[in-house]
Image 1 (cartoon, rainbow, N blue to C red):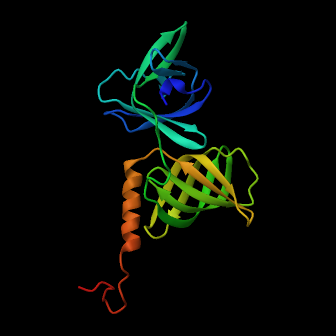
Image 2 (tube, rainbow, N blue to C red):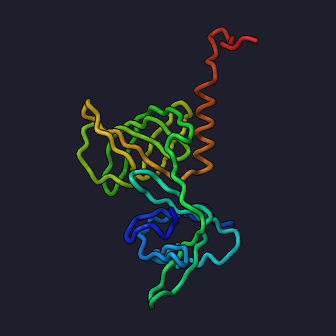
Image 3 (cartoon, rainbow, N blue to C red):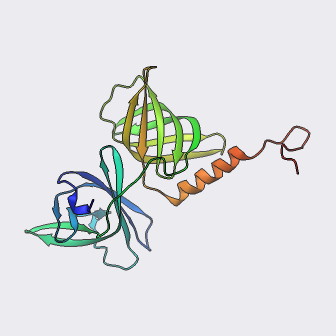
Amino acid sequence: MFIYELEKEELVTLTVKMKERDKMEWKCPVLDVSAKGKCILVPPLKYEDKVLTFDKEGVIAEVVAIRDGKPVIFRGCYVQYIKFRDQKYHAIITRENGVNLNRRSHFRVPVDEYCYVNHGKATVDAYIVDMSSSGFSFIVGHYDNQNMEYVQVLYKDTLMDMEISVMGRVVRREDREDGKTLFGCYMIPRPEIDRYITARQRKIMKPKDREDGSSDISV
């Protein structure tokens, strides 16, 4: 699908990387679409209460929308601040087709740690199951809130001895027979998460040293 085939009022996630700043992310509604301009229009994007122009070189942008419970990513976007019908917008333009992200296309590493899940003003105890470059899943016991959408998950990785915080959008909910609920979440891939996943997998695969100092590896 093309980006202009998104629906008005549909919520999308825009990620922008600029040379002089870290990656920035906005969640915003689609206010209008233009097949001729091959773009969507979103409310003016601000940073520290100032509208950004994105008129410098080295700007990389991508948009993620959720269709039928699955993330679709539009890469190769550029962002332009415009005035249209006496209203100001940011136009997100790309000629590339959206790509369906298969949640199993990225390697998943088991985590198996207790965690806290923040959504809105609420915090619930949970258990994070696994994580990949593009998502994670967690289990909540006996939780009735049907409106959990954007979440922040915090936990202590006891194997790596480090605090982890990730944010994502719920794209799957599975009510289990034991009364608990499994949530699957999509998140924008980040290099630091890739490094964490790789380091954790290496730690898991590393043979434990025996008490006598020998190793399980034979050469």
